[in-house]
Image 1: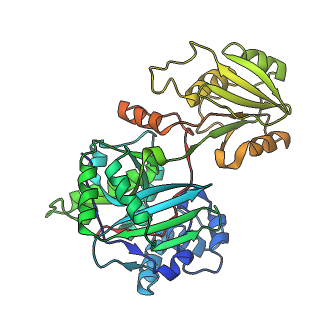
Image 2 (image 1 turned 180 degrees about the vertical axis):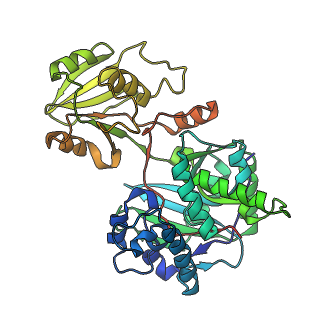
Image 3 (image 1 turned 135 degrees about the vertical axis):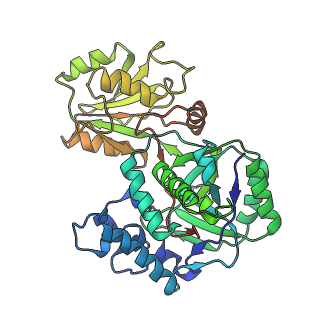
Length: 415
């Protein structure tokens, strides 16, 4: 069962939310954050990217930077830019992208559920990135930014959420960078909160969609606090961390595409010939061509788009990993033909989120920066859940969730 609880959120007053909210820390670099914050002293970047308060070039891992995060978090509360709710709530967070809206419940997720594997992951995490986020959670004694979970579709929760969606939201704005609409409701009714808690208790698992490092860091700090408290009861606030939970069927996963700098010494003709061993190759001409189904890929090379359809026997539909297009392309194209074996470290390859479109792939190849591009059909949420249930890990750079959660709408204190 999944154990969740409401919490006393720390949030900006309605009139300040658009000055406080920002993109998550890991989708932009320090200089982009510095530029977006500009002269806005209320921007949450001063807490999640506090290196912007130091001279250009200051490392985001400098101990002074973490201390500045805590100093700024305290300042935001003292000046009323962030205020803690008087009582515990669940919250609803809706995002609208290109006419489609997804509704998430903001909850306190149980640390022990993560540690015991009831909150399931599908990606590996790096210890250095975990430690960075752990330092940030420790110094602020808070989850400043939420993690992004999925849960199996639930009609009772959907009905409850849709009832709130017909009412006026607490926050309602269009973000300046992504152009997407973000809405936020506060759930105060005790019966509704009990319904949410009890419906989650029926779920055997929750699934991390995005934010594996934040999830690991939040849970590990909570576990640390359990061990440090001789009077630990299990009811302390640090036993929970903040998550936004969406129904799996509502989530949008975009393609996560590849661009490669060279053909590993092959000519274009030799490369296409090598592909023909495992794929049916069809020249689609000069108009952009997008894969239309699983196991079909789009190749952009020398001004032409090609369809690559994986032949029978090159993948295993019974293997939750072997059936993935990211695995097929990694094995049969990047590794076998191009000699690219480590997607995390090889400098010959880069990755382009699907929100940028096929035009970005074409641009990077036509500019001469890259030699070819490969577009993939998006992974499904069901595939992610199947992999998480199997205990396996997806290949790197497999999923691109959009829209990203905005930071600063609500914060969870650990004490």
